Image 1 (cartoon, rainbow, N blue to C red):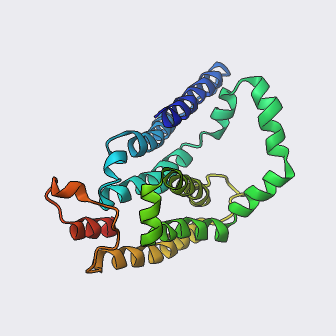
Image 2 (cartoon, rainbow, N blue to C red):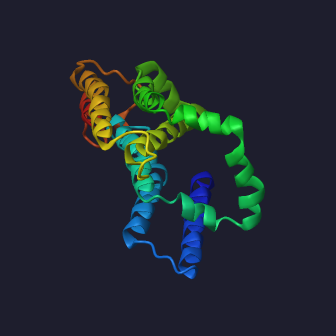
Length: 232
């Protein structure tokens, strides 16, 4: 859809425009960072513009693959590429100075960013979005309602970026967490995630009524679909 492809193309154009300006100034950037950024963007395109998107309405395990791309792999790769400076450079000067600069200086937005980037808040929200959206009645409703489905995806992407920035922050001296604390935090969030996956995988009843597995056209039982979704 245009709502996905247009923003994606804009961010890619801004990136390469910023990259060109950087090279004009005689500064270099590793090819790996560019490849990583494009791979992160591709994760979002793959999740929302490929056959994964329509199939995710029929299979829980495909829906979980989509969520993995949106909340983990996509944000992680983009943050590892550290694209913010290039994206800002890629913006027209008028937008950068008249719109972006005042937004960055806005105290309310600064306070909001500080709140959501706090290690405890970012971690809790990252885990909460996974758990809350897996509550069967809420999950089923979100899959069938376009607005709520979009909000589900947005909340996962948003909390994913805040969490993975916390884990992958490359700044020396000003990062909020030491590398040791980042490893501990990564281990801690696997606990509720593993428990949730185990509950879904081991349950003998079909928890999510919204998935029809294409009425067996793929020769897969609903309970098997649920077990695969829990494992993922």
